[in-house]
Image (cartoon, rainbow, N blue to C red; front, side, top):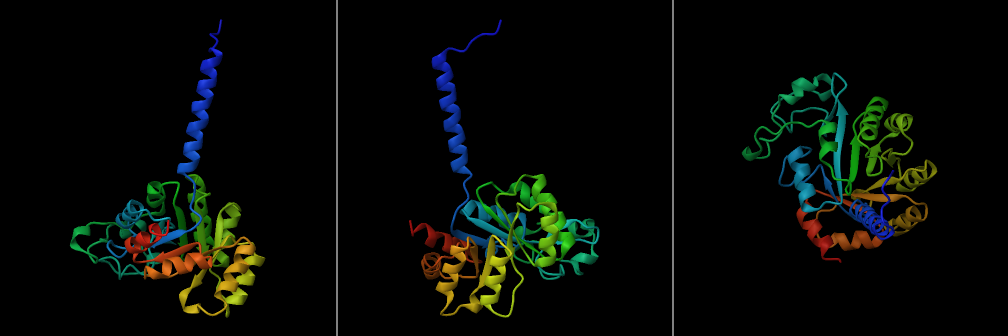
Length: 271
């Protein structure tokens, strides 16, 4: 015979369960606006490394941007440039090096000796350390294949909700072949901001990225149009604390910056 749980205890159990679920939902809620760590906390740490991403997480970044491309043996690594020359002690194009070859390189010493031995991370390693309440701004360097493989990696670790794939149309096609639920930030720039905005709305992209070099008198109207059409805006880039309130008030969702700590401080003072 099964033991029956007393009615009062059943109510208590259900209440506690609901409270726990509510707390979990609140803790993993993604921010509507905030500061994006461009290539991690790259002002103080070597860009696009685990060290830079962990520091961005520690500081409280609302979004973290990083770059993904394929190696010679079709493995996903985090690297902005087409070559490893600038940010490692090696040379050569990422696409012409194997993962094993890239993993032998030092990706930290160029920034500071205290980061000696820092490795070029894989996408999998980066996804594994990311908490669920931070947006992942994943900038793809490549076409359809890198889109497909990146989407597969995101789906595999259940990070669809927090991921935004910043890419051009070929890579976007690869992403959509794997999952149409992953959000796209349209990076297929056109001759004018007007055309870029209209294309983004037409394609039903979730995000676009506005460049500060294209600021003009129509920016407020542009942001209003995007908001009315449900498109969120990443702004690249701003480094001065005084810009935080101005941009967020105008309707920008996330401000990409290299000056992470100071920009986060300015954001926290808005509350």
